[in-house]
Length: 425
Image (cartoon, rainbow, N blue to C red; front, top):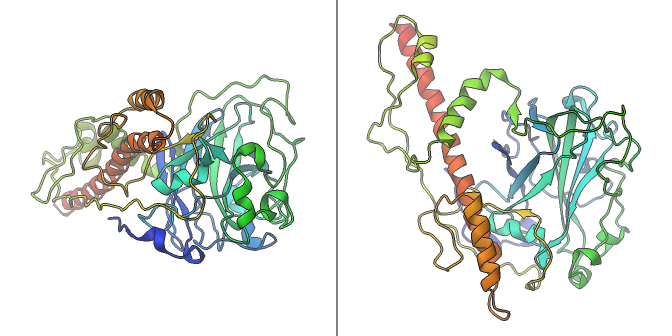
């Protein structure tokens, strides 16, 4: 399904572009490919960077448009965002910050535009473990963004942005997604610094004018000046009432399209089946439907639901080549804010061979244990591989989730075919 370009790191930086590939909020949402529409809260946009800070494309990316889909997330919840260059190819750049904003929609987020959106900054990331957080995306990792725990419930547009600074001019990659935020918070952050896009950035801003050779003098987050409005302080800002904020109980993302509820239920069942790690082959494996689902489909039918063969998954091996965009990072004691996990483009046929590596489909606790062990055993002067191995470990859970999503889609098609056969009879 995915085509891996093994020599992606050799492509000229002038030709390297990208989009959001996946957002994980317990339930995952796949980003639409450029110029395509999809049932996703992630807006469709072109892959090209924006190079003019005053361009209208600074709103949500080139030729951006909503897919008329909302998803919900609880205040105080975290999401992990993954990027790719093209379908199946990891993000190509390694230098520059990642910044995330929210703007209240005051109704339908599909009606938002550059003139109406007032953005407040909820997250900004530069360095972690001695390297740009953006550099971890080269290996398929993601970065984590947390919704303010006291944020007032409502519809919000999220704008997450990678700024690539390896060229003599900044490359902006803004992408948007639509969310209904739930919970008992009352903070609107209306008194916090807000900005508009275009309008919040200028090429003369300290964090942008360093683009090119000057950026390599920046070696830590404290050395870098983030562009745009100030980062909000959770617990401060405009409030609609004096109620104290409580994190939402429901931290899982829910697609608002109720027509797909059976699809989500099937996906949840797949995710809890820890023994189902193999793809169905072309030998005609059948899917068994629950009695409740069969009764819904046809109360008079006693026919067992069977499905045609599911295509086997084809996992392509992807070369991990070293990027030449920035100097090699050094290990530091800075705490990691990265939420790593490679997407389904990585091969899962073999486990890493080092003592710090994880087993296939390891859970998060095992990955944390391996991370601690690797750092405790690290000897200065040796190659630092803990971050890469931690990313690979966490990546297995995302890999399984992606495979389950693909199976779920095939099951949905088979159910539709099964219904058609009932109607014909």
